[in-house]
Length: 638
Image 1 (cartoon, rainbow, N blue to C red):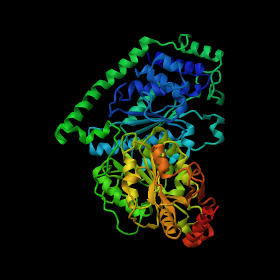
Image 2 (image 1 turned 180 degrees about the vertical axis):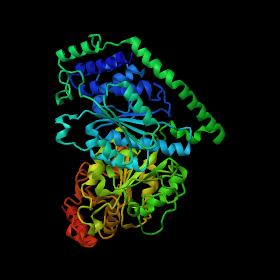
Image 3 (image 1 turned 135 degrees about the vertical axis):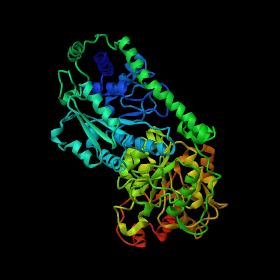
Image 4 (image 1 turned 90 degrees about the vertical axis):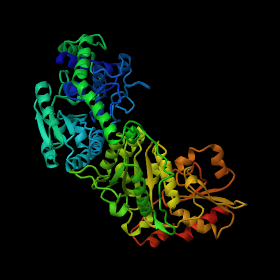
């Protein structure tokens, strides 16, 4: 029966690729025994339910999507043959790479490396939840390819997994020594198991990926490990194909002759999308028989905990099952009365939020002392105590973003911080946050060339434009404490990712800023009966333009902490704030790119900075007070 099920999983995967005219048959043929063994014999899953305590499986080698979908179908998940026939077609349940909205798919894995890094966030999340709620205890499995392990983000994330001793993580490494362009000997010669041992993993070897007995024995050992586990499974790419063990079988459909001879070898019916219903029903029954007792005990453990520890009040842990938005209007914020750096104000606000929201957790890329994004009123998460709220990510910006995605998939509200110029390191993870609409908060400090002597490598110029160009990501650059609170109100009220841009330098606490207006994205900070021009500013530049408006009459000053939020307001509100017949000038210490959809002129920074004291940098870049004022006057006189 095992052989018949594996054969049917392979044939369905190949038929999907053949029907679509594109896909990756190599991994279908090499990894089918791995994924079959996992689903049939190990994964604690309950298809088509929202069982929170299920094991998670992440297909990091996302090009193996046809293999995953055919396995999910054979396991009883909510797929039909028509769904499989629609592989890679518009609006199907079977897109080219796994996506979060699909039954049985835990996350959108996207580019190689993202899946394994995200899975480490899921494993960490389980450890944190288990320390708080003992009835939560699941494993995280991830299937990776040579390509996943070549990507730098996998090393970053696995290094942290070893440091935190995430022994609930099991990595299944499809080791076939072949990539799209050819043998891995050309590019990838290290001993992977030895590398993982040095990172704190236990490592095992399966010499033949078709040997189900050996596979199951090693997975069983892994489930009992005192450390995170890597199982290297030696396979042959495209096993059984005429192109077996060559790069030619990696990424394009098999020929008709190859498909025919393969189905002969597999002993499978040649009818496209043939299903052995007896075998499928047996697999579904096998999973149900194995898991039903575990599932029922899990439900009973949950009920016992609620009754004994929460006096029957399930609402206290309802975040486990629902994607909640939060109203922080009543939180107790102590706002500064005078000047203060927003990174300092932010720490105070974050600590207040964490008192009300235990799922508000995160950390920085080794920059707590600089970004101040640290919950001083909470404990640190360590390899021996996962009950805290502060995560030490180390100098791993990219992995931090991916791990935050994994935490968000468990309904945490996670944050991660670094300098704005280092946002580039995180871009692939930010993109996956946005694609999956995960409520990750990216906190960036040191937000302009004004940081001075650190020089152009640390002075952000193009990063704000990059962030604002990312679909489904809200970017906030508040000008003072009230706007920072308003930004958090907007962030917590929307289940989506956000980037919070904060100053290192002190900002003035202004009388006319407003928390509620901030949630509209932009509002009038200072007005005039006769408007000669409208100045739009963000962040620390708001203080600058307000001062300039004392010297230049007839200006309307707009604070725009979030362009994305403002663009979601009604057209009437947008036009009321920014009348079409008035000159509109943006002032921001960043690239001018991306502002001309609402502004006529932009006074920005379109070149890299220099290393010098702050005032010298501003004068050199012609972004000092006098230069900005002169440019505004010149524009108004045109």
